[in-house]
Image 1 (tube, rainbow, N blue to C red):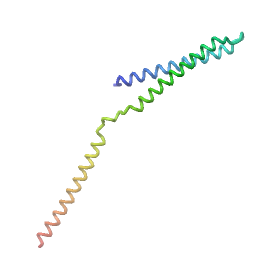
Image 2: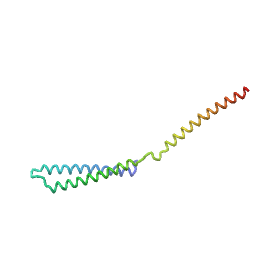
Image 3: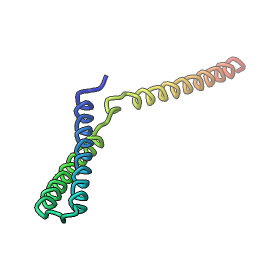
Image 4: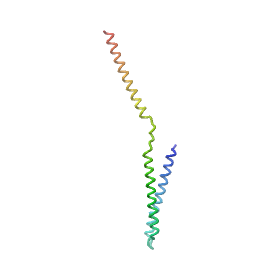
Length: 115
């Protein structure tokens, strides 16, 4: 199940996607106005451009925040994998040392029994 943070982040990204579509519609409106046979209306173009620039700024801010949030997200932060592996390696080293000590004890026992 998704966490609330992931849902919120996905919702914000979906809103950004909708705003991008709106920005493209604004750009299309400017192109339509420029192609108007009676000539472009300066006020209409200025309003579309102002809204376009504000929307682009808002999109950039939202995306920057989402990227920052994604970089801070550490799903394995509370994972104990590293410590478990270190313990397993330590255990295997101890087993090896014990086997070597057992071998040395057998050798010394054999040597003492011969003497």
